[in-house]
Length: 159
Ligand SMILES: Cc1cc2nc3c(=O)[nH]c(=O)nc-3n(C[C@H](O)[C@H](O)[C@H](O)COP(=O)(O)OP(=O)(O)OC[C@H]3O[C@@H](n4cnc5c(N)ncnc54)[C@H](O)[C@@H]3O)c2cc1C
Image (cartoon, rainbow, N blue to C red; front, side, top):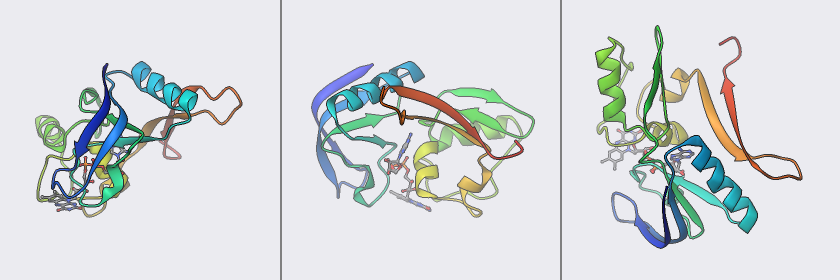
C-alpha cells in the first residue's frame, strides 16, 4: 500500500487543497481495514477521495486522506448488473457495461469520476445513479469497545 506523510492534495479544479497528515492508497479490503484501524488507534478522521472532481471542499482533509485509485477492479458481472470496487472510474464502468450489453439510463458530461464518488454525491444520472445500486460494501469503525475496522456488505431488501 502506498503511504505518504504530509501529502499535498488539491481537487481537479484546483480551487480546494489540503495538507493531509497521512495519505494512503490501499489496494485490498484488508488494507482498507488496516487504514480504518490506524485512524481509530490515532483518533484521526478519514476522508476518502475519488477523482477530486467535486467543486466543493467535501473531499479535503488535514488528517487522513485515502485514495481508492488502486482499488477499482471489476468483481463480477451478473445478469443485469455488475459488481466493482469503489475506486473504478466511470469510463471504465461504461466500457464494462458496453461489453456486457448493459448501460446506465443517462450519462454525465464527463466520465473521469469514480463510482463511489458519484454515488456519494448523487451525481450524474437521472434517475440518480444511487437508485440503480443494489448493494454496497462498507468498511467502518465497529461500534463496540474493541473499535476494530470491520467490513460489512449491505443489500437493498429483497435483493
Ligand atoms: C468538468 C466537470 C463536469 C461535471 N459534470 C457533472 C454533471 O454533469 N453532473 C453531475 O451531477 N456532476 C458533475 N460534476 C461533479 C462531479 O461529477 C461530482 O462531484 C462527482 O461526484 C465527483 O466524483 P469524484 O470521484 O471525483 O469524487 P470526489 O469529488 O473525489 O469525492 C466526492 C465525495 O465522495 C466521497 N467519496 C469518494 N470516494 C469515496 C469512497 N470510496 N467511500 C466513501 N466516500 C467516498 C468523498 O469523500 C467526497 O465527499 C462535474 C465535475 C466537473 C469537474
